[in-house]
Length: 477
Image (cartoon, rainbow, N blue to C red):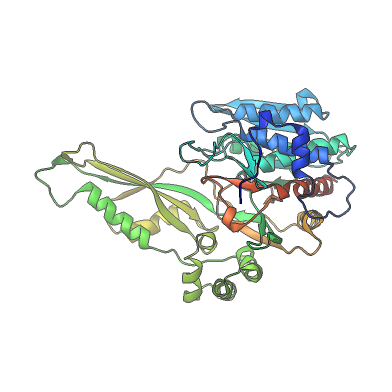
């Protein structure tokens, strides 16, 4: 079928065309006190495309501050005082904090959280310009389409429209977007420290729903109440080196390679907690592969079921939920083509199951390598070790009501533990409950966060707005 190319770079897309694009793409919606109009849907998509067109990548030419300005202008146009929307420059990036004062100053604020930066994307690698958003066959392509400029645009638009529609929060609402969540997370830490008096955090980066691969219908939705600890460990071997014509046994590159081979073959012990156990038990019903579904059920009952663990760990989408993972991600060594290497290094990226420290994992890796010549150092940036958020009835109730208003009254809701890292960790370490709860759905085959040709289905626009029109008023009571 020929591609239906119906929109190009956001700056050249008319609002009328965007309205025509999103109308009728979502399932029937439940009645709500506040709701999205076709104009709201078009404005949300317009904002998403304009933000994707801004290259908010760490380093030279970082335009994260321009994304913040885009969001600020939308909020000010909806009624925020200019002084209530602060954009703060920070190193080569910036962060945004916008305050909507509530009627009861004695209540702790509700924080709505996200990030504006994205992972680097090279035009030569992509089929389309990663920073030239385009819609084809009902899919929005561009860096940040799923992580997380689409979600950010839906959140900003819904919040602005709530104010226009006359909603007035009892609890102060603070909207914040960090500027380096994908890298050092320094602004994430700063923001969480500033807002550590919050009641709870709704982080729209993480969680989300699954579409059926064949029918495209929503299967289930997850919210994240915990996440694994991010860690980077550097392996290093040093050697006096020498002339390549006179090799000797202790070659730094060979010794490092032997260590990497051991790490590549090693598997940490399988683990589970209340959240992951529930996820495996419930999500098994929506796993199309009968063998994997059986393994998920078996693992929920017994984490030491060797056959179940082996099958689950063969699937990249499931392995992270079964325990700690460590994988080599970068490698360097040697200094000349005709010289023995004096130094060889590798980066090991680990996602550590809650309850374990980075020091524990280093000690385990040292035992696995069993080679004193290989040193291991913690070079992690933007990483904190936290436990899960409490399962609060007010959040679960509001989230369940909202997502079912958006996607259907019988939609299953499942708690999950995120394998990746997010800004929620910094709030949790400050004692503030944080929940990763994006309303966006995707097919597993169309999940390309951090990868090539990142995309999101436009059928998410109206449901996402419906979700925010429900959950924000409920949590701001």
